[in-house]
Length: 378
Image 1 (cartoon, rainbow, N blue to C red):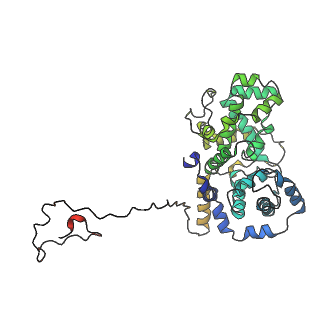
Image 2: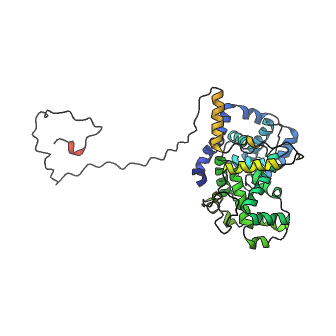
Image 3: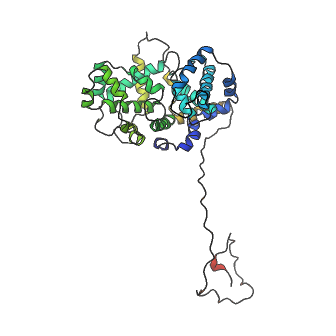
């Protein structure tokens, strides 16, 4: 729930590596990133990466200058991944993902977060065949058919398939499609809850663009429909409006009320619902589909599943379990100086009745750290 409300900006650099398990990867592989960053990269991949560097947030202060630390750090992170996973190489969609990570993390932590996103959250997304993207496109259309049947029918009629708009959303984790504050809120939820957040955000965007009959009538063809999906009003994409919770009914084979609030977390799409739909679409895939078959069972459902998997792997190696913690110490407030009580002109009955002399016998008083005013002997 705290991640859904948004991680404070000052804590994202500490929370993101903990949520995705990158701190464990970095701890178990000391010195790996430095070796990969200093090693010569594959000339083919280096040329492709070099051409894409200037496209990643060109107006951001980190990436304005080609010789700046932002573009150089991005080059090292992407080159290190191509050496770490040479069978996958480099995918252009990894550029904006790594750039967002570098805005908040040092290069080494950004690298291990990128590894976790590519291999744990979204395996099969950035490989040469992108088989998981094709599967999730079918899953998205199935969810759209159940939740927004009128929108699904319109997309079918105008010939807009999910592969025309969904890869840019899912592969880049909406880094190129939403205002940047909203992107960070999506990432907070995504790293906490897993890939189902991407489906919630995608369904919300389609609902905002084509949810009403007037919007669909204004998009009679393919180009108009794609334009509507890319031209949602910025006021509807502001982080508080777009991400705030709104209770609606759970996922069921009925259409959603398109007149209700379109917030992301209002779509109750659980991991069980998503896995059920994935199995249904896997059973319908033709045997002649190009590329290797998708492996959806390798995708972990968010930070809790990643933590449990890492603890299990550490127990098998005999490592001591480690519980990630983030301790935030609030700043100490200056205490006001203690003032001596004002006793002039006041009468305290019963305090001066005891005569001076040896102390009275009786049970010993409990030791106190400080003496109160009424216990003072005059």
